[in-house]
Figure 1: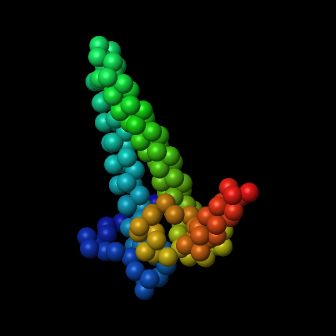
Figure 2 (figure 1 turned 90 degrees about the horizontal axis):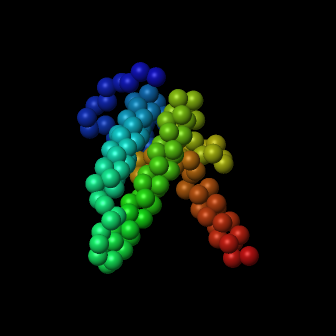
Length: 139
């Protein structure tokens, strides 16, 4: 898919034809920018971890560093999972499946996609999914 020049102020609306080329390109660029930012943060996390020594002589400082490192690793893991979801969304764009609910096949609301470009479920399907998860957890 070749990239297309987007008008700088373009934002998809419900009035637009769903997943027309301009709208698709808007989401593709948004996903690619998000992915680039997450990769940049991931590299910075690695650099930070390599530059801080865990060999602190003071036990409180060492405990604090270990706590910070654990938090950085969790953040990095979350970023890795997000990148995987972004890659999935980009594949859905390539196969013309992006923007459609995986459960119902219906269009996902544009405002939802703008807020969460990796969404795979409509609001209704997501709510049903969460209710079923909650019921399952309570049993």
